[in-house]
Length: 410
Ligand SMILES: [Zn+2]
Image (spheres, rainbow, N blue to C red):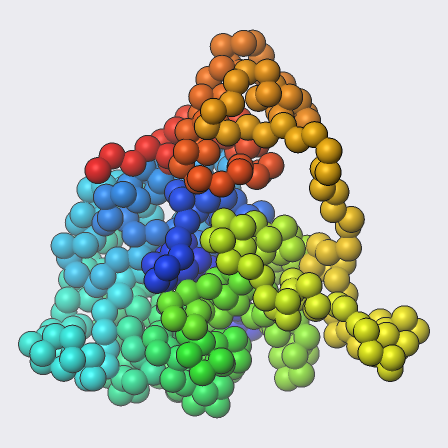
């Protein structure tokens, strides 16, 4: 039975979005949260981009030393040889790549002035795939940008050519969010049956249907006999109106009529990590979680009107489709309202020791404490926000990687 996997693209699509972004330390923490949640793969950045180099290499080191042990770290690049070569030059140990190129006649005309189309598109992609394997890639997937406005026949041809060159998956990008759940189901089922390779769903929310299209497209792939890999982002961040929200996709697979009985919920996912993750992402991006956000919004389990409150109190199933405990909600959160000692860019050793003492971190001697203090100062310079508990713990636990991640040399 084919299965569904999650590839989270927060650290690629999420951070390339206009007006929002993350510091490299924050991107690293996003990978840590995704790993802890049991997500299959993180599209963790742009390996051909110089300011990402230290962050990407350090995260691959974290994978090597067993910190990011479960998750696959995959880089995004254009489907051209030049990008692949530069990616391996800057990030030699990268093992997983997604290579992207436009497959719609509309983009060929409007982006490339018709200079590259059909066979040239396929040639550019297959050359890039070959180059990636030649340079040491273990898995390469090919992305059909604007797939929802591409000819189905061409997509099949593109997929088959990629497959012949060793591509593991074909990513169907609904780049403009133009599909409906129905259209994407039909198209993915047809591609699965025809191309016979695993398919990725990359859906945007321009019509408010990114999640619906993702799960229905995945169902199409599954019913066509192939595994489906859904692209998500935490809290649905992403270009324009965003990508498919990670939690909404998971809840749809678990609880929606027509999906829940198909047993499609990805294996090894720890849903109870999402509450802390969603709040961290909101803080790191500086984007408040909407009050009505699926599962993690303030009102997701709130009831006030007479009939609803009475019903929820009698039995939660009257008005709650799933349990808040399942999402890691329900624990009281304490906030200091008296004295508060924080650690930041101008901290001294006494305050620093107090902060880490509260986190129950001990240093073997003064030299180690001083070294971590210096890194914490830099971490605060780097994020320009009070450091979170998890960020402070990360810096103390992985000082060498933290140092590398925060080093950006123009
Ligand atoms: Zn996208």
